[in-house]
Amino acid sequence: MAKAELTTVVTPKCQRLADEMGYELVDVCLDKENTGKFLRIYVDRPEGMSLDDCERYHRAIMPLVESYDFDFLEVSSPGIDRPLKKDRDFERALGEEVEVHLFKAVDGQKVFTGILSDFDAQDMVLTIAGGLASVVGFAVAGGIADKIGRKWTISTGLGLSFLALVFMCFVAPTGRVVGEHGEYAFPAALYIVWVLKGFGMALVHNCSFPMVVELCSSKKIGKFTGYYYTASMSAQTITPVFLGFVFDATGAWRALPVYSSVLILCSFGVFTALVKNIKANKVANAKGLEALGDDD
View 1 (cartoon, rainbow, N blue to C red):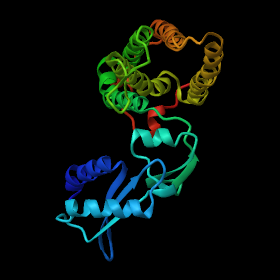
View 2: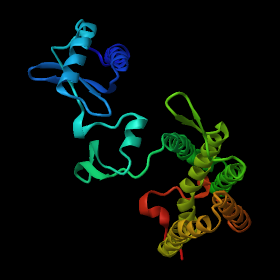
View 3: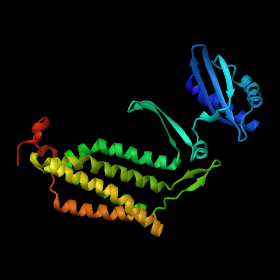
View 4: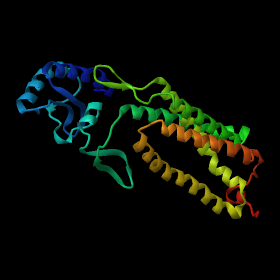
């Protein structure tokens, strides 16, 4: 049985039958083992599944799927190891201990355990939209800098980020419930804002540190790198604390875009007025550490 057939044909049949019998379809999977192919169907209900429930569903589903390519059919309750796949699964598990299984190990570990403290599918979509825009920004920032220089590439990024934050001051971050299953939808403008901000900040981050290196001598790179990261990390440390007090005192969510847009506007003004532009083709075409030179 192909994966597409399992997803588009078998699973919908299992779902329809589960709905008719008053069960919740949790998962359908096809596992290949030494003894053959196992079609495993996991169903549940609020009061829990009994053996009789599983047998009843097994007898009902077998005629509907027996023509497909598998050797054994298993119907069971997911139990305590229930997988979290749908929005309602995550919502049900809020505050509970969960396990995260990775395909690729991180620091030699594939399984992590923790408490699921929050879940918002739309936040995930917004993050993905901004993330994809950042990927594009990082990919093209070098080429843009080659054409107009790092100064104006960074200035463009700051300008786009400023526009995004100004728009955010006027776009409500709250969405609306749509669909019969309680899906949440944000205004389309908010996705545009996130894309602009993701792309703009990618232009800034891609060119900032290289510009620090290009504007100082080799003997001062360490000092100015320290200044650069001190300023960056200070902002990342102070901002959450400061805005936390503001939110507690006023409850005004717009404090964040207002605060950020003011700081970016100040950065844009100082940066464009005081920092000189350097194009990539103006930098010595040296290799490795030789590019740093021996200047004072």
